[in-house]
Length: 356
Ligand code: BGC
Image (cartoon, rainbow, N blue to C red):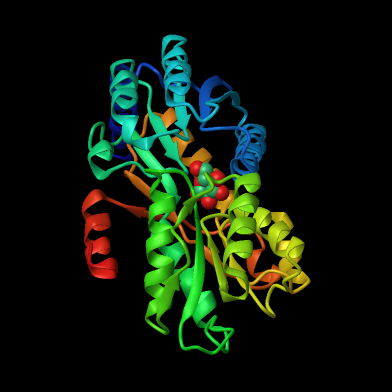
């Protein structure tokens, strides 16, 4: 009886692995080499540099543990979608086993995914969230690993609201703020801008000084925008919201240059928890940032990529949380679980949490 059962089980195993081979000709045995093309929107970006380095290091670690070789070829999209599309199409033509893409313009993702699909090359999207329609194009083989930008905006607003004076330094009952934004059409930029102010408004009225301005994630532009605002609005300026820490670091230079004192006569919040900003937090010279957890996002992206390389189908969304950081300990990096979501789960959550 037992022997007969074992034979049937062995046949079943053989049969399923045969089917597996027929269905997924790309499956490699252990000890294999996998070619992975990684397209980064632009190398000249503090946050994406942390992400890229961690991704590379973690793939190496995983390869040492599982005996496979993961060859990563990185390309710098130089913040130009045409250049990046060419780089991705080259990866496809070279027959890479998998693509990891931090798109310059996620609204242009569809054609890239369709091209990858026709060559049967799975795609892991990172950092810039594409639309739900894009995620529906090639289910099971396209996934997004990221964080929900709305949450980072909410946290920025909360950090100001939680101050004793709610950001109202001159006591006139409202908060006068400057908004420094990332580039146009970027989901992170739009959502951080919207949710930071909406959240603060639940506690105290706000008024923007001038118009929201695009610093395109760049430190030098952040400095320029803040310097102009400081000279135009002087002491009226109470809070600076910056869509990322890179631009906020520029604003800090401008604030120092104008002789103002952060956390005494002006507040500033950013996103990313760059090491330079964490250091400032430790000295009480920065109000708050939000950890954009490149450590967990890159580790999860690598782990999901390996599932895809092994022929598995995966969920469309893998999320990590942003973490509010007003002191250095808040921004410590440690491995945390991801949350997996279907498109329907995601849509329901957006409706329930944000009424979208
Ligand atoms: C980060 C920015 C970064 C941008 C690049 C955002 O999620 O917060 O720091 O420059 O992504 O796309």
